[in-house]
Length: 191
Image 1 (spheres, rainbow, N blue to C red):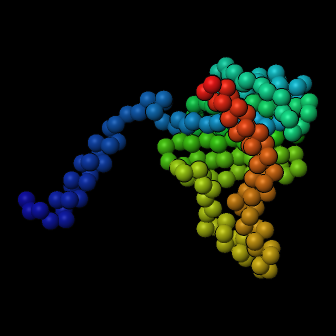
Image 2 (image 1 turned 135 degrees about the vertical axis):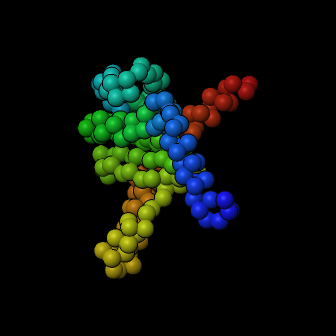
Image 3 (image 1 turned 90 degrees about the horizontal axis):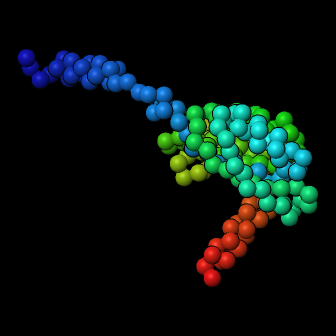
């Protein structure tokens, strides 16, 4: 038998058959890791929100609630999870029905993920993110923005919206509160 293309074709066919025989357990297929930051939640919703999260994740959760200085009378909290791919979308779908919430959720599997921002004023944003956490905009989305917005000012606004800029700007003060709180805890621990 020669070493021509037919030999390679046979070799690739054998490798393909071997790959088909590999079995995966459910825990190895479709697993993701996520982080939910709830920037503002009325006290009356806290227990309902926790129950809803437990229902969606099918596991008990623990959120350490802190008062939210930017919205007196509301609370902030965060949690991480490991669950099936799509858990983030289910969580967001459940949470967005409570319009008084402000939150951000990021979910990763292997090399890509999704990010969600929600505010009552702006509604829901979903973006795809790469392994560095950067928002990735598809070619089709760019083409659509360009063809629908012929004026440069309109195009700029459309592109900023595709990248989640209005939500980012709205959420930035809430993120700063989280960073300052983490810094003060670190300062107390280092004394």
